[in-house]
Length: 415
Ligand code: COA
Image (tube, rainbow, N blue to C red):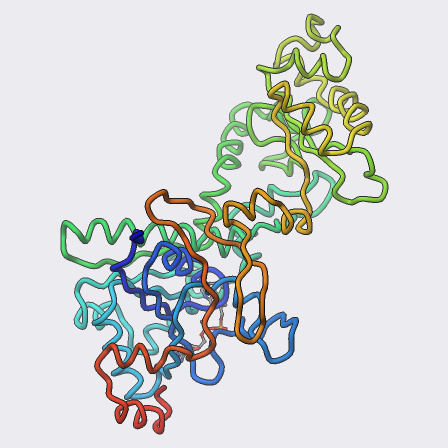
């Protein structure tokens, strides 16, 4: 079967997490992704958080599937020549270096356009143009600067960053969409263009409901679905909402049977208006269906704490799986709090290939997250991450370099 991006060649100049997430997606969709790394060292994540001495880390192997690796010193004259051949050969260059690093390597937009006017140059930076544009940025900095941390956590505690890597992987996703959009436009114009996804902006895009709430707060002085309502006080900015649902349907995380010893024996429970009578039936509070203090969503907002306390009495009598099973019979939206251990063993995720096992020559078999985006005409086969420089000779031969050229480049430290 064909792959959606089969004829797209990507010069992958990315490292750490944000850029590699983006190029991994393109590779899963069939693009030929050529990862260019520094000779001897490679992407810093190869050596970070290692669980097996001397073996590429899971950090690296889980972010660089389906790619080829070339080692190239872009700061040598010969290395720059090879890089220009790669620019001429590829459709897209993706990078997430610190601000200014590309220019210091001589890879200005003007230079790249001269070599290949069809080239799409896609970048992740921490910030867009402005006061912080020169700053280096990692995941949690982006979560803090993009509005996620100030709106996450509990009202009486400090800002909290999330386990979901919305700064890195979230930005990589945004960049991938920018790239395929630019490729689509190039079909008409024949021109390349620059694509920029700043991490702060990507996080804010994922936090847009909180900017919605900021404006609602400024207009009305309150946010009825937040746990601060009706007893607590609102300040000038959107407060941390704990586990309250971000939408118009109130929700909460409730304890289930076994919570005393199992830190994940919890369920997320949403009191969706459409199924309120069913909720009342399940928990044995049929009287609440007609009681005017509870009958309408508006009335319930005044009593959310006692309502969830009563529902929790019921959830505590069931395991999270039993509760799921019963609640779904009534179409009541809910979700078990799954640990990473449970997710790793989840048969459904295994079946769809979202959790998948791959082999690796030095690491052996290991678990990874496959492509979460499913295309019916472009199936993803997850293949292992490359060893450092594993494809240098192969890729350079495709560019027209002879065995003698390679020897010379190697002796000069360019590859
Ligand atoms: N050949 C020669 N030099 C190379 C090279 C190669 N193949 N690959 C990288 N380098 C050089 C760069 O040119 C740069 O040199 P310079 O500082 O002299 O210009 C150097 O390696 C280091 O790159 P840099 O990006 O500054 O790495 P860092 O480890 O200091 O910083 C980040 C890491 C992530 C903080 C930084 O890259 C950054 O802010 N990136 C943008 C935001 C981002 O993506 N953050 C999320 C990361 S998950």
